[in-house]
Length: 331
Image (cartoon, rainbow, N blue to C red; front, top):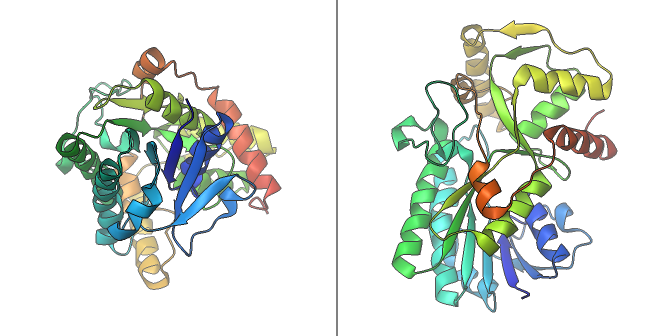
């Protein structure tokens, strides 16, 4: 059955991939876009843009009119912000507003895009899963705290309105159309252009953005309301990621492993400069705090319940580099 789906964040990295996946399955797609949004990721797509803003609830009902499905992908994803309250308004208040508006509009089902950032870490270093719980006090920085609180807001909105909401928790998506780019995309670009001479001892779970999009559609079709599903790929140390990028671009991989302590003053200076310029710093204190843990995750629940089958993460790196190269990011 064809759905009429509203996708929030459709101009962004993950949201545009979800929009493309919906179109490929024959669904009609509406995109909630702000008037000043960068719409390059919608170019050439048969998507109906509807102007609105999560911060303005009055604009949400017209966007949702006639929709049977909601994919709430939009989020303020930055590891440093001048005004943390703006991030909370976007990620927490915006989530509550769009889900309540969807229920009022008669939407049949919604998928909310959370993040593995809301999960805890296993003390033995094994990959975390959906049962690895954390508290708000354990969340590092405004992004992780806002996403943690947004999950609570999504559950509350679902309970109070009766809207069936499935939660998905992507790990670290990479791949084509990372126009911003995301913090991880910035690492790929910097590494590919030889601007990362050293690394810290941490790890990430990499996944192709298009596999994350397919996971969203599978969650809509087969996910259980109230449940959450990690949409991840493969675990890599940061040194292994940088080494693979070096091979793909024909550069020498960085060999210097840095302890976190000496980088702390660099992060302080970078953040001070960013407060003056407004540009996001390359290294932040919150990023260093996060790097103390390997961010490894298991997608076994999604594999079993959703038939989620991500491709090898190495292919995601290839596709990301190809896109960055083609679009002039690797100068």
